[in-house]
Image (cartoon, rainbow, N blue to C red; front, side, top):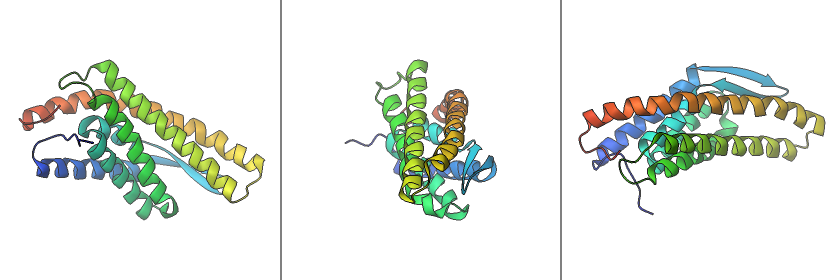
Length: 190
């Protein structure tokens, strides 16, 4: 598989990926509302905005790395360390799916419809992965069906709200930032 990247310059790719990972981390750390759910918790926040934006701006691989690493670092320092490996993978997949859809277009053909489909598909992929992981974690510890139902009845709507917010903000932000990046980086592959 040929890795698509934002620039011909590998230093630029690495720097922008690190910047997006830092934005994912900061958004997760500071722009959230934690919601306790039985013995577990979930969050309503803006982290997925920057995960989707990473996939849109950086493509599948670099965007996936930025989303996964930024989210995983938050889990490691934010009290969610047990789920850090799963977060690394699920957030990577979210941005990867988004990036594959958007970046599979011919150069310069990132039409609004393709960007929206990429963002929504990436977000819904993450929703499915997160809910499946939450269910599996509860099933593995032998939780009663009522407890599983209670936790999922809170996690599912919160996850869908996060997806809706992420897509509503990331898509217009992508177009605003893409134009700025094009001016700043003449060899930009967008």
